[in-house]
Length: 219
Image: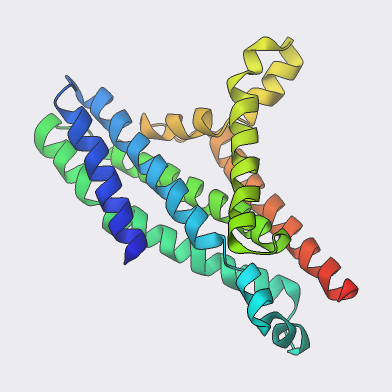
């Protein structure tokens, strides 16, 4: 409820502050999904920061280690929970605003679909980053800081990619989260966007599993 309320209020404030200055549906949809991007990042960061570290601090991680489930099962179970919450936010909380877009600007329905897919993929990606941070940190705030640093690093590298030579610029620009997300908000389903978010999710889930395995052996 707290995450849902935060997402609704944050998105509503951004939309109210920008709607009066929007002259067409292209501008309005970009503003709308930019607000969704902000709320889904914040929500998934908050939700994921205690996903694993709280288990360690409460002593329940030892119980999980002694149970007949693998580290893969633990990580996938927690990720699926995060993906479910992300789906709820994307469809049922953010779903109000496409109705407003259609009512005021007659925005095409396909933009709502592609934009929502982008929001969901971004949310799952951020949650996987947060889980990795939670597997490394000793408390929730440290876990949140690790996740924020990872996301900001990817963001900054992509933002300043134009300062590098062609090959390096291409690689760094591919790491820019915003450049992949913004295409979805324009009604496009870019292959590069799917590759980036899905590969990122699998990478950070794999790193989370390896982090748990190392802690299991270290004790």
